[in-house]
Length: 431
Image 1 (cartoon, rainbow, N blue to C red):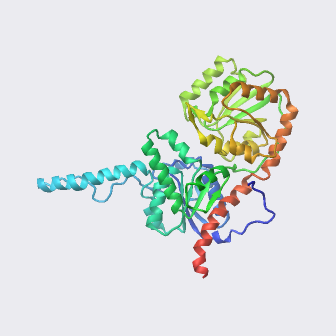
Image 2: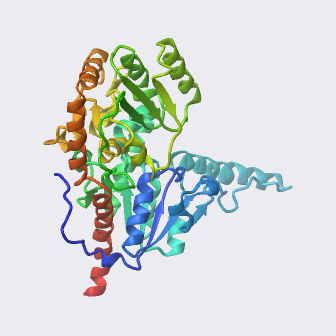
Image 3: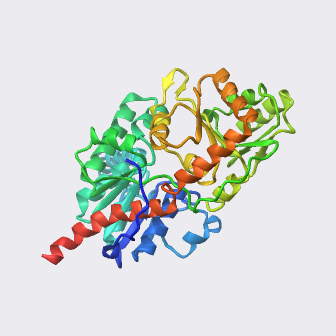
């Protein structure tokens, strides 16, 4: 299923005036999907608020799109009413209260907070009287399910990845992982609509949830596509993302130590793991590539397409098998960087990823490699360095593909999801 631009603008008038609360369990400063949802819904005429955990958002770091949005902070660490140990001078009353009231409630609260980092959002949303509320990521699933139990306000649940495989890598305890997966499916079953990031992931969830109102919203960038530039000399290769240990960057450095010709490699992204970044820099020095491999400071989400456009070939080689464990999400996901590369008019070197191959079908923009084989990656990159004419053709293919997979499509997909909920709200009124 390939998204296509429409010659007529969809009618999203049912969203006009709707009060929608987008909640988030993490720092919203760099969340591109949240920014797109805010933009899409506001352009459709909805009134948008964002709910976060208190002290989780540095106000001075918010981008322009979020500075004029109502941000509701909820204290998720507040004690339950009267949940204090007794200091009564009457010893039997003190013992009874602490043993049979305080301690059981304290344990219950600790257990709930351990599985639900945004507990209390539901009560705040109900008090505010929103028309539609939104929850993001599997760690929000428990509260999304609570919301559906406590109120008739429709819930939109959104997952950025295929959560079961992510949960399995983050939580080694099978019991905890199983519980989190079950919580997410419960949230999906009770939601008015579910958002996923690609058709393959959508199909995976269809076999798990009873919810039939599941929508694909692609990870397109915040800016429209740019025309590709002619291939540079030396040829410019580019990796853009968080610099983190499980993204295959060690092998990427080793690969470029084996290729010949005129090339440069830029690695750009937030330095979230400083020690790992230092290890990579030492690796670059060891191979004597300090004048050809550079580490660039990150840019804002509205600048990534223009930044990528300065290069020729985007690279994504996240290993689908790590420490003997299959990371199914790597095969199924359609990450931001993939769309950024294409919208910037780059040729691409990508691993053997099912979802990306399917959505790129018919466009010769990618050199597909076995991301687990250094020799295979070296051979494909060397072919590109030796054939700039082919790289130019691949860049043109990316530009053509991006005419059908860009911000315009992404904003429409978001609005269509909420439109399906808004129309259900309005139907009783119409009758």
